[in-house]
Image (cartoon, rainbow over all chains, first blue to last red; front, side):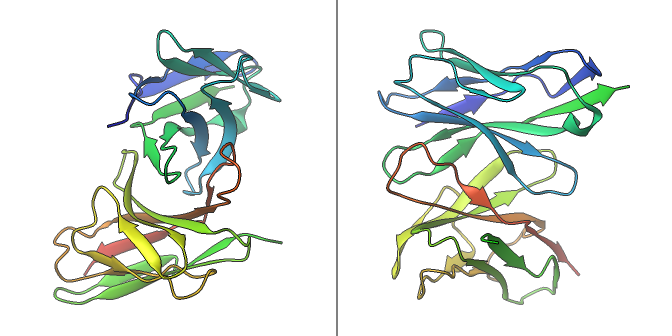
Length: 114
Length: 114
């Protein structure tokens, strides 16, 4: 069974600073995908970034980057130059390779202070 | 614009009543998913469907039922057997041809008990 662990219930960051949100995972699959989603207070889920288990380079999408350490089974999200609009819940998720199902972590609430 | 439409946005259920949550997508995606989110928690998979007229149970299917008669539509029925239905319900879809494609989510339905 796949498992995602996000150990930080809440994180605080000053505007314009960088922040790292932790995610560790457990799977017996050799091929898997890791996703990060943002959920604002309005509830919609916004896709941020993807990392495949065979990707050699860490994924980047604008201000988002994924620090993928396969041996440690971690896939931390780094947000650079935080903005007030980044305040939200952030979820790490792993995809089942057979049916595309996602297993989600418990989430981390990020608060950006001005 | 293509997307996923969930309705209604808010729904109230009386004791012993079945209610149906609508999910429609015009993204031409084959796979569709239903998730449940409890306050401050991650998402848990209820049901998923890879193709029309076929669907599988997820991790918490008891008390729920689905149908997939059309590619665009994947309604979820919360039956009276679901004793704790109060939650936020999210529908998602994705293409199945490419493994790195994310799930796209609707805006969700908030279900409460009257």
